[in-house]
Structures are given as C-alpha cells and as structure tokens.
Length: 115
Image (cartoon, rainbow, N blue to C red; front, side, top):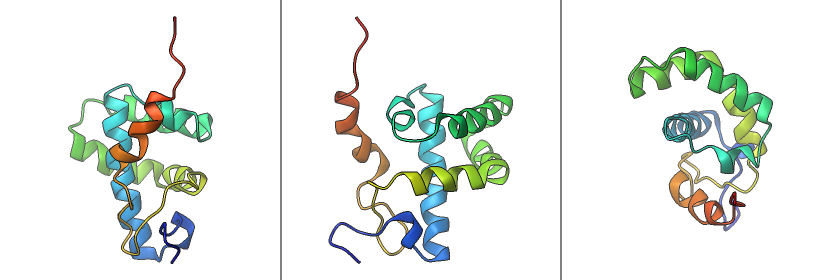
C-alpha cells in the first residue's frame, strides 16, 4: 500500500463493497443537497445523469431505502465513478483515507462562482 492509500481498483472485494456503500451514502446526501458540482467536474456526467434520474424517480423513499434501491439499480454506475476518482484513496478495509466531506471541502472553494 502506498503512503496515501489504495485506489478503488486495488481493493479486495469486501473492501470495494465497503467503499461503494460509503460512496453511495455520500452521493445521495449530496444529491439531496443539490451539491454535485465537484463530483460532476471529475467524472462522466452521463453516468451521473442516469443515477440522478433513478434517484429522482425514487425520491419519495427515505435515505436508507433510497440508498438500497440505488445500490440495486445503479451499482455498476457507481463503480465506474469510483474507478474514475483516481485522487481518492482508501484504507485496506475500504474506508476512505479522508472522509468524503473532507475530501471535497477544499475543492468546493475552488469552483468558479457565477456573477
């Protein structure tokens, strides 16, 4: 393992599952806050659009049920996103080295603002 941690692709199956579920929970939280700009600047927006459509169709669900449904319907899409996020590192157990909020906090400041 490097000093920074492991990339998603380098995790074992159990660790990938942990990372995936953690990311889905974070993604839905950001979706509900209408705050996916940072992620959208780093990954394929077509993938995010498909995930967001599924989330929108099931928005009547509570967070936990929505996460489970989104996992069921969009697992492969989330995996594609995690593979594209090459600057995010994980511990061997799949937990992010920096939690998701902390990872994006500094980057939010760098986003261009509208005048």
